[in-house]
Amino acid sequence: MMRTVKFILPILAAAGLSAGAEAASNSLWTTTGTIVSVTGPGADAETQETLKSMPINHTVCAAKKPGNGEIKSVIGSTFGTCKYSTFAVRVGRVAAKAQCTGGLYGDASIAFNGTFNGTTYYGSNTSVFKTNTGDLTVRSNISGKVGGSC
Image (tube, rainbow, N blue to C red; front, side, top):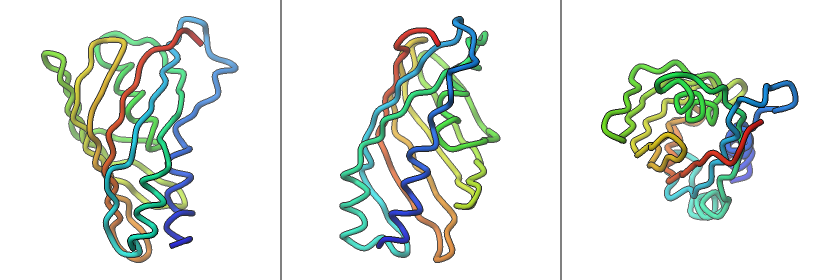
């Protein structure tokens, strides 16, 4: 169980970026959420409950970009450096799939589906992390909003 907890903690905390050198025209996004399920090797009942009890809470300073660039960077920052295979915003709906580098924790494949209105987003995310013991699938519900400039 401890190995799985050590694995997922840095992933949940990795979303924050330093706002120190950013221009004031950037948006300060706050994301909150909950893990709703954890499955895979090493995800016994105790590990699942431990991970599900940990809230998702992070902020990121995102450059204001035309089109969907800002929300794309906000969602992707949660998982490190991501390369999207799909990213679409249509009529307020967001659908995204990406491969993200996880550094010491390996690669993660993510799939996000939700809503976006320019200053808030909400959705469900499925992340599949590669571990030494096999794939760990983490499903979460997250929401984010602009809380000011940074």
